[in-house]
Image (cartoon, rainbow over all chains, first blue to last red; front, side, top):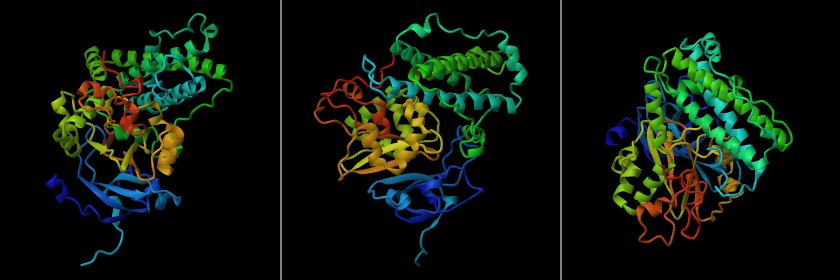
Length: 96
Length: 342
């Protein structure tokens, strides 16, 4: 796990924003989280999955979103979505 | 499987619900598995359309069973469910990769239009009355099964697959299944060291149960606690640790489940699955969007102190592995448990 984490640009607990579009990225970022922000909860590294994907995608993070923020409805529930880092940007400027 | 939405009661209570399940699942296996497979084989020149026509000459179409329309509704629905199960097993056999033509699952998703509204394989509209819908399903299932038989014949005739590969795949399919999931959960309930290994290392951990760990990416295990309830979906297609746990419940592949569970997790669990969770419990949806394929580790039911692993495993249902139900309680008769092989 330690080596997997070393490849990540983001850390657990960091707030990230999902890009609106990323034509060169993997198609597996659901529309409902695009443009939304969430918190990184787990780092999975680059997962080799030759049965599923041709080639290896960038490192994968689990990102936690709130149903309330995404769908603008009263809810205390959450959505955990696994996203590749090339789809993510820091949600606010990083402090030095 | 077709009948896993309803509990496996001896008597069928909701005919319409069973028919709806068969309709949805049959269309899934046609539009998402068999026909995309045919298109894929055709596009790559593995099988030509003419190969199919040639094979069809040797494979007779099934005729309607004698007296089919005169049987009572319940036995017709059961026959449909059995026919669907056989069709699903056949499609899984037809989906083996020949070593000469390696396919990647992601290509299949693109080619069948999972990411593109324009390229979906259309669903025909349903007839109106329940009897008409059953008759239509009987007709459709015969046609789909015939097409599947023709495809298998063409694959063998063309030498794309060998009988030996088919036998190997048959044995593999028989070995996977929800009972594996039940055993994994029961071991995690009794053995904290195993549980920790499972949560952190996933597939690797199941070796000690002599379960083949499979190779579909990483296994994610989402643990339910007193304050957190997990439920799994795959909104982009229907990813699930199939290779380890067999097929998920039929509605896992159904678009209405995918759309509703992310928008209103708690409400969907209550309305559709009759699972009421207190305000103090956070409901967390795990969308299996990429290389992690998720299963839920349900909570151990109260009143099971001193139970053996085998007894505990019988409390684990296929729905509890997805998170739309808790594990069974000792008081409830274990009717919908994950079936023990053989």
